[in-house]
Image (cartoon, rainbow, N blue to C red; front, side):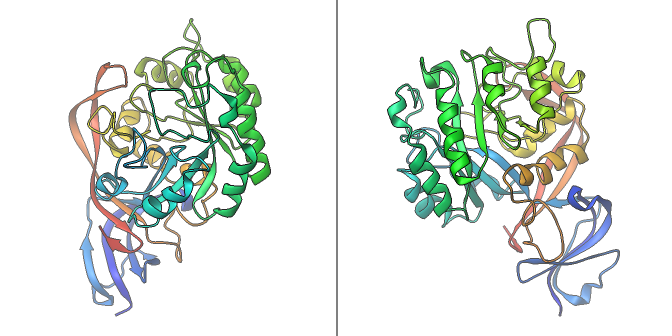
Length: 372
């Protein structure tokens, strides 16, 4: 037998290869081995019929908090990812350069989920959520952050900074400047959380091509949409300049009205992520497929949300050559889904209820060629 697993008869959606067609996929030794119209069953040890299902690259969630047992927000990644077609998550700044060794040894390395990391510019990271982590700039050490990134390129993807009044106190955009300094030394992107109290144009002016704005549809103040409901010109310019905009739903950072108004004007996020943590895993976020379903209700197609959670997410973290696709020879990270019709109740992060007519339901998750 040539293959370990054969996925037979599913609709393969792989934006990286512009695939949207019924195909068979064969997996061998943890890698994608073949994609064809009809691969004989007798060539595989195990055949999984997936007719009327969608087969996609494993989903990538670029904003989560999975430093379980150490930070106030950390969840166990494997508890949710292995059931939801999500094969890669990025922890967005829970660990600092000081706590990164523990994150690597006790969280990332033992996990079945592929766990990557943005290193926080603050030396205390996100250990204690109720208090802003960089009210004191002495906590920032760009040189040590850069050293950590350079020494751990296998699991690090960039620098995290939060730019809201609650997080930075009276320091304005100085934390962002320090994060960019570290990122430039290590040649990596910055992920910047935006929030109330720091003028968004000041933040956007500093962001570089390939840097990520997360919580792009947050509605707490200093939003991408002004008082008249128009997307601010600085956001349009940042997008034109190559800044990446990410949903980062979270427990307080996704407002339905902001998303609706922005998307009606054609301002669509590049990436869809959850900001999954202890405060939202039991609602309103739950998981990445639920978040993707909300964006479908706001007008995106299933193919579009899959692209934002696979190919675009992989590009944002500079991993598009190895994950986020089903190319032959790459790691066999695969999600298998249903798209169910009905009336489904959703909530944004501010208790606004809305209803969608479709919901993405995960069926099977395959990580490195193994059904999990």
